[in-house]
Image 1 (spheres, helix red, strand yellow):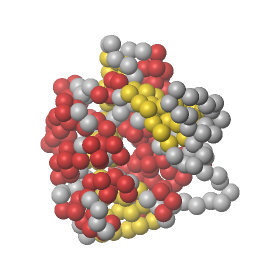
Image 2 (tube, rainbow, N blue to C red):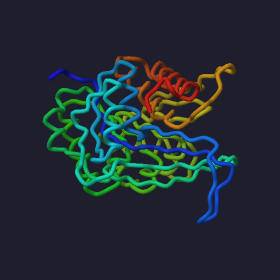
Image 3 (cartoon, rainbow, N blue to C red):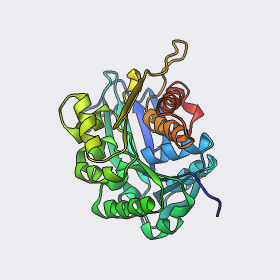
Image 4 (cartoon, rainbow, N blue to C red):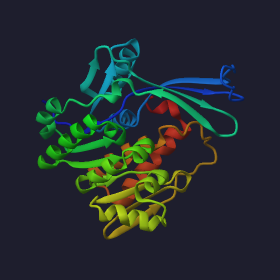
Length: 299
């Protein structure tokens, strides 16, 4: 079997986004000014972007037995991502989320996790862990008890096999599975939250105290994604911040998925031996490319 660099445990969703002039009352109707149908899921986006960046990556996730699962698997495979651990589950639907955005900046989401709600096949994944260098976990794989225990097993065996590990906690998971995420931190080299996720995990205190609280729980380094203000790397003895990439000639077109693409840029660089500052810069650049040229990266 050909050795790979990264194994991503992740969610795979269809995201159907609508931009409407107003949000209708219950039972009402409105017409979308723009509609977009794309492949989503934090883990899925990070895995596909890693593959597009030339980092040999496999994705472990669940799809339904429906036509959306057929389409999703084709899109994932087209990026060169190894699909050996993507399961097609009979009698399950592929995860589907509808996002309705209105002019005031609000976004309302309706969704079904579908096959994502079932645990990953730990017994199939664990024997292959020695073929990888790094394990990346999407927090959305921790929502259910069975899911949590499956990922806990995989992470424990990955550390025994010498893999490094990273975790993107996810907004919903940080709120709903906070204790589960915190329990993972002693086995996590790189925690990759945004500012909202950091506050959900560490509580309402000054940012430096939030970062310090999570480092004290055992994670090796915290990489904070701050959107337009860039990113920051902090470990027990070192901290570095870099501003976001700016280019007034490039219009911001789509921010969705930028954090997942940042993960890929950062991880590819740090696993190749880059310094924390160099890895932040790589993450910032990939996030900028996602925002200003959405078609460059899969989705």
